[in-house]
Image 1: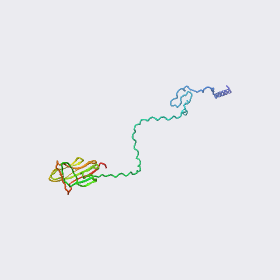
Image 2: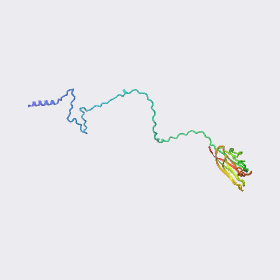
Image 3: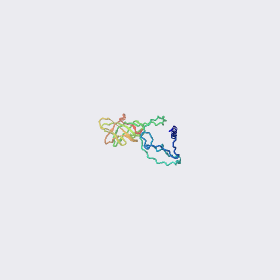
Image 4: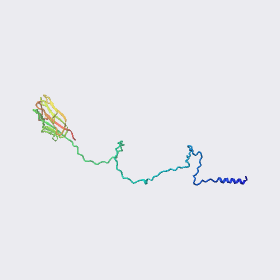
Length: 252
C-alpha cells in the first residue's frame, strides 16, 4: 500500500471515533450495566445499593390545611360534678416566724380585786348550868364582829360569804361538874368540848375549820341536864370566848 492510501485509512478511523450514536428522542436512556450489578455492595464499602436505574426515590408527604376544617367555637359545657377528695397530704414544714406586730391599744380598766372579810370574837361573863333541854350558848361581850355576821341575840354566826372558816371555843370548867358542849353547824354536831368532873376547874379549848355555804349557821350548844354539866365565868374576867374568821372565800 502506498503512503497516500495509508494516510486516508488513518484519517477515516479518526473521524469515526469522534462520532457517537444518538438514540431516538422517544427511547429511554440506556443504562450501562455489568453482570455483577445485581449483587449487594460489600458491607462497610460505603457504596449505595443498586436502585434499578433511579438514584433517589422522592418522599411523599400529606399536608392538610386545618384552617379549612376548623369550625366555630362551641358553647361552654355544664359544670361537672366535683370529684372525691383526695388523701390528706403530709404536714408541710413550719414556716419562718413572722415579724412582731405593733403594740395594740390599751383595754378598759378592769374592776379592782374584791377582798372578802368575815370575822368575829365574842365573850361571855356569866356562868351557865344545864337545863332539861339543850341550850344555845349566848354571849354578852363583843370584841370583833365585822358587818355583824355574828348575831348576838341568837348566839349564832351566819355565813354571808361561802368559803373555808376557822372556829375556836374556850371555856372554864365548874368544880365537881361535867363540862359537855358541841360546836354545831346548823343542826349537826361538828366537834365536842368535854371535861370530866374534878375538884379543880380548868380551861378547855377546841378548834376546827369548816366549809360553809351561804346562810349556814355555826353556834355552841350546852348539853341537857341528863348529863349534869356547867361552865364557869364571872363579871370581872372573861373565861368563855368564841371566835371565827374566813380563811378563803369560795368565789374570789
